[in-house]
Length: 150
Image: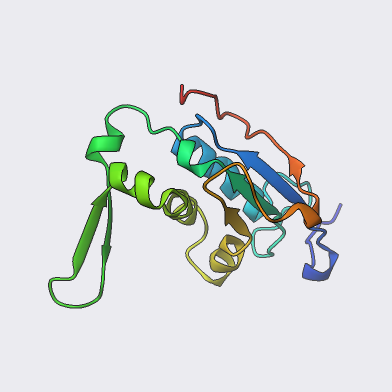
């Protein structure tokens, strides 16, 4: 039996909507990364972009377990001397909660052109409303992600 390799023109993409209310950030990010890379499909091929579109709503209600809200920091560098920037997740979740989820998912995707292309199919919204009803996204529950972050 030959090994099946998916071709980019054969890929059918679906739209999924995920409600992020009271789900732990890491568990949610791993489930979304699997959907974006296509690991939930039978035709998964590592070097082909065979993932789906993911719409995340209620990103402002994502749970961080333990003391992560006060202790965990998002750190980046501007590229200039002394340009190390950091922000605590408490302020990040208040000001820009979609950024926290996008950075978590980005860290779980490949670090190449394929990963960047997969990340463009992630749409994150702060509230319960989104403007992508025309694509008819199907509601999906992330496996392993439990409500209340436990």
